Image 1: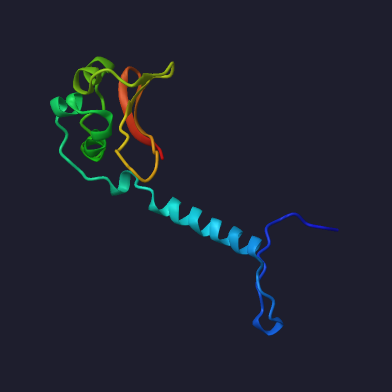
Image 2: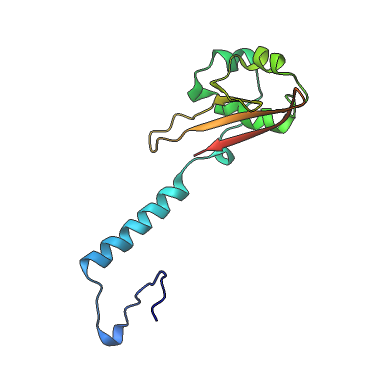
Length: 135
């Protein structure tokens, strides 16, 4: 009976088996992919700037990411109504049927095409939480 799964061939120096070019290319591809995944910038590595509503509204989407950590950590949006959020942040990039406003906050990154969004979730007409998604 054969089992499905991932196997890694370890070459023993005593047998003098050497990986062929296809195996080496596969291993190299996996290493490059792992490196690329680790090298992606995400919200944890973004700079933190104090939120300023006028600067946020005037900033292109590629610059808004600088304010995201402060917006979340300060809790200043929690409990606000939709109209107050739009007054502070401007019109959303997307508004879903669910009570959520979404703002693109994609950092300008020349290495990878990453898209991040700040979701403002509402419950009972007021902001319940904020979440960054994407990558």
